[in-house]
Image 1 (tube, helix red, strand yellow):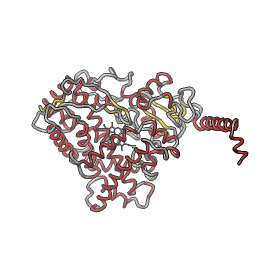
Image 2 (tube, helix red, strand yellow):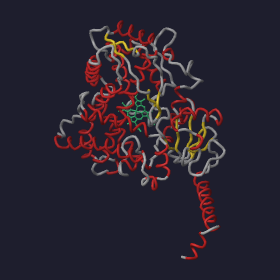
Image 3 (cartoon, rainbow, N blue to C red):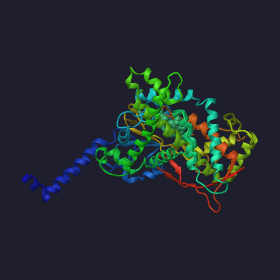
Length: 501
Ligand code: HEM
């Protein structure tokens, strides 16, 4: 022991430190070096944190555009941890996610997600392979049966639109209020009806707290603490900080869903399933000899949480952007209202079949989704096999970011990419025109599972709101389009006045 202390004192300490530094550099170089034929990227990176010192995580979606100018539309970067391939612009994203869909169909598994669900099941969004295929197929089929993409869900959404309008009426006309909480509750109620079989009143404190918890936690998702957790989970599990708060908050959300599952198990009748949870309980019976398909109670809670969270946050943030654009662009708002008055009038609620006859409103909703860009970096993908993309080779297991910012603002596609311009979706005759690069729901095998539902909700909520109210900024306030970026790209809290029409 005395010898050890002797070695460690004076120059001994220097040797040990030197050895440690050389070890970390070698380990990092061997583990994370670029394989042959890999897309280009910054020439050197630091041990462990990679290119983390070159980026700010809250502006990453914009910084990646700059990297693409330097290294091309398919490039690599180390965002703390291993090399990641970034696809920039419509062509690159389509060539990978659509033309070679199977090769880009997996998701990364992050240590923090595994810890949130305590390493057991990974639900719909983060699972891979056989279990993901079975769960995605089942979720799509079940949501369709309960009216997604068909007429039968329409009356529920129309009813919710009425409730939302009544609540907004109670905000007393010209006094300013922040519509976020109400929009959140209204949109969430639609997915809640589908998965839990029930909606929640706007004054339900427990539910409001749950929605706030989800929004606040989503804001923390892309932060540096979470990145560090994913790099060295063994250490970060014992270091206090926002990452631990995030884990405990997500567990509260899954706890809320687990309670709903338990309530369903008490009064569930196999012959008449009421919602997704009942159908899943039914399916568990059918799959009890195939455990690998993931039809078990634990996965039921995680899949339901995924639908609940994804179905709430995305669509409500888009509508929140929609109203912000309307108070920023009053002329566009008036044109939407003229179309509503002409096609629907004021005596009946908007219906899905009106969409065909309302190209301008439809174009405004599409432009809101394009500029709102609510998932600026998309969700991560992973290659399922060694893959050739243009002249590059991307090994199996590499994480890939198909940047939606680069697609929705692609300067080679959109006429005025950086302005809010509904004409992007209109032809010379004022008819609606589809655009290939309109990919807010992404594309390929993992394309958003709720796309149909979201489109129904956006049209019905947006038109019902503008049918009943004119929206304006509070007197003396100049509206802005300021935003925050966590996992989603969301307007900064703002207030508006809803003036009954
Ligand atoms: C405006 C609203 C929405 C937008 C912009 C949106 C966008 C997206 C995007 C970009 C992805 C990642 C796709 C990929 O990896 O390529 C995704 C995945 C997903 N979304 Fe949505 N989403 C919306 C609404 C919804 C709704 C209402 C639901 C609920 C049913 C939902 C459920 C999901 C699920 C479960 C996934 C994971 C799919 C998988 O991994 O197979 N989304 N969404």
